Length: 113
Length: 113
Image (cartoon, rainbow over all chains, first blue to last red; front, side, top):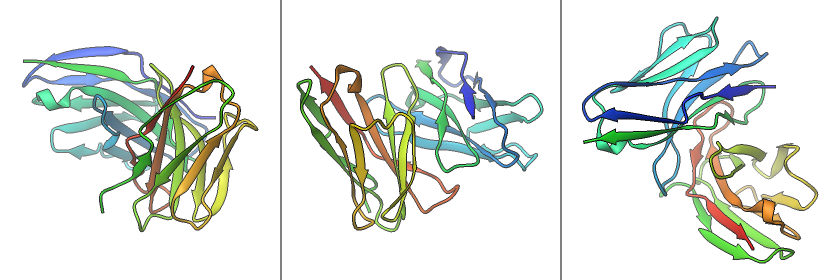
């Protein structure tokens, strides 16, 4: 079974600064994928970034990057130059052995102007 | 294409009633997924289809729940004899398959009184 743990229920950041959201996971699969999804208030969930476990290089998408530590089973998300529009719930998720996504409980990110 | 759509967006029902939700995936996507999200939690997988075939069901999908995708296009999720514990956001997602990105709809919020 896969599990995903997000230990930070809430985080806040000043506009233009950098914030890191934490995620740890557990899986018995050798081939798996990790994701960060963003869910803005009353809006649908969108994919922020994904990481294939077999790739050692950390994924990057514009201001969003991950720190993937495979041995530690850690997958944190770094948001640089935070913007007001980044305020949302952020969910870490894993996928392996099945097409289903397994989500953590989420981290609510507040961006202060 | 406008993305994944779900109807209704909100449903209020009395305990014991049956409800049915509809999901229209992105047109070329052959995979369709259902998740349930309760307050303060991440989405939990319910079931998924490849075309019209239902390939995986979660233990969460009790006998009162049934999902169909009769022609491999839209899908319906029916809950019979609703209970207060069924109150949640029901999310639908679709993808081209396998480990491709899952695109989420806006969800149907169910309230059981």
